[in-house]
Length: 313
Image: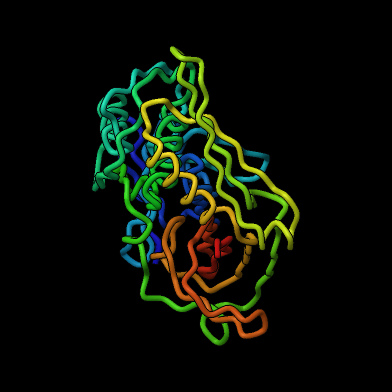
């Protein structure tokens, strides 16, 4: 069921029969995915930098590079490997001009010589300026966030079996139901206004030449009455028009003016489930019957394939 191929230098090894534990972790727009596995030594020494390819039931799960090796007195060796995005934690200074999340992703792949897959064009041009002393990943995640605020479209940056992709979340929908009598055997539900909940949006655009500030405010009085006054504040680039700033404020209010609901699920495994994918969830006890976004997932492949999900409602 599992296939483990390791390339160390010029040597290629099939260690499928030696692997005793496998865990794959993936989080939406929070860095690289991670593969942890343990194998019996058998006179084979995997080295840092070795390439690992892992498939399960003929489905490509992970391709990446060994970054950590640990061992004890027994014959088991534990390995941690990351995908290509691990290299993009490097800090740099970038000048942005007519850039989008897609153009930045392409630049990143070219700079680090990474293999690319599908790069969706987000269609939102970022403000011209300099991004200083930031990681490539943080710069692109910021671009994804700005695109969400401006266009209402969310994108996932990830490595898909050795190829960097940028995909709209809406294109990652699965024909899958999880919940009552459908693969799920436990869950935890939470509803909160403690983080990222705002019912008043205040955006300020400052003109450096005139030293004047245009203030745009949108709010939901009914929400303020129910939950209290919770304000979001941001300074926006002067290149935006008043209409664009108003549209951005409306978009932010729609995004943040709702209780944050989160669900953790324990399920039988499905290889198609990755961070950013969506599926239908049905849990009658909490009145849940809707499509959810996977925020993070951890797959365990041995002895049985199970998965732990954190999802966004």
